[in-house]
Length: 147
Image 1 (cartoon, one colour):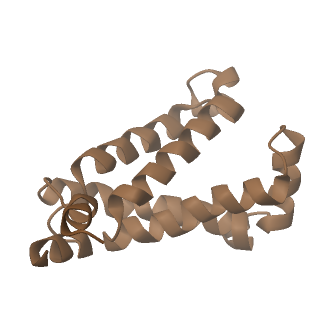
Image 2 (tube, rainbow, N blue to C red):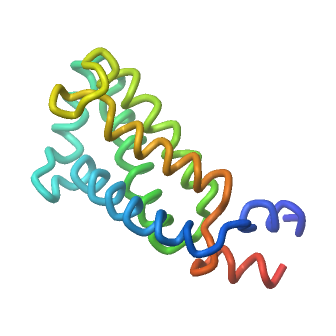
């Protein structure tokens, strides 16, 4: 791989603010992904999530559940560590766009009505990390400093 590509993937223009954003957002995403994949934290696991995905027209359900759960769980872990933050944030942007427009948009903005309010906040955080990178306290910052 070329140094330019490595530098672009791991670079960060953000200071400490990105760290303050990425860690709690990463925890939220990892927990939601664990619900979908493993049934942790009161989730339905892969089989239950797959059935629900099929019921809302996202087929094949198992693949869609793996993609959504994988993006959230592994993307969330990547955000927590600050490693491959931009690719992880990109995957999470896609996951949030699907969640907002396939599930929540018809219910309006507010969470009380199962609206897209929370998804929009996670989308905004993911876009900010996609643009700015992981910040100072990250594996990405250490790697980009060596390239």
